[in-house]
Length: 241
Image (cartoon, rainbow, N blue to C red; front, side, top):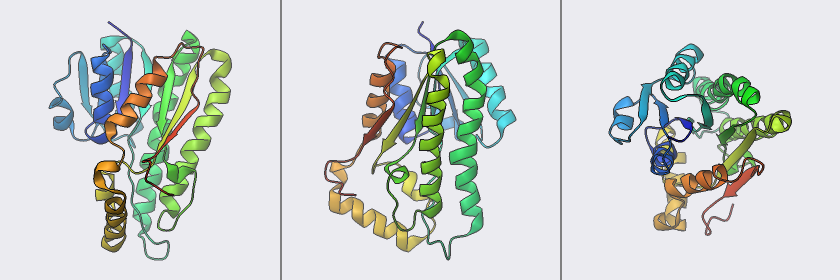
């Protein structure tokens, strides 16, 4: 059996596609999300599914410990759990800002904190942090969401510098527009409509698919440990911004 891969936000979209891709490559999995029934419905072999809110670090650590007890040390962590709540800075509720900060930044950091010590001791391991093109380019209605993704980019690169001497890889995956459930989290109906209209102008069939991002991660992970692909920035060919 190959080494253990842990994936947060694994109930749908990029997380579910990544689980299927790594499972097909022979890896045991620890899948983490709030909708455990969605993960179990994937029916993947050698797979532990845990209902976890990543903002609860004790709950997250307990699930990570259970996965390692079953399948051995985590060799790859995919920090995929995230939320996109687009909104105007003058009208968006503060609790939506806090939700994005808690999930997109704190939840990611909690996962890193758990795995990084063991990876350094073993002199091997890979951490994928899911960012966004919104973490490279600013745009209206994305003040806090973009801020969290800029933070993910900074965290990932600093982490890579700190782990390089221990032969541990940190890679950021930064997708553009992907056809997932992410937009459904936004509560501002006008912004949601405008975003959906932009997707349709590009062409729904031309958007990135979750499998595209999963393919990129498996490709990067299967490189020799001496090769660290530091960042993968990808977007639909027809996406202009």
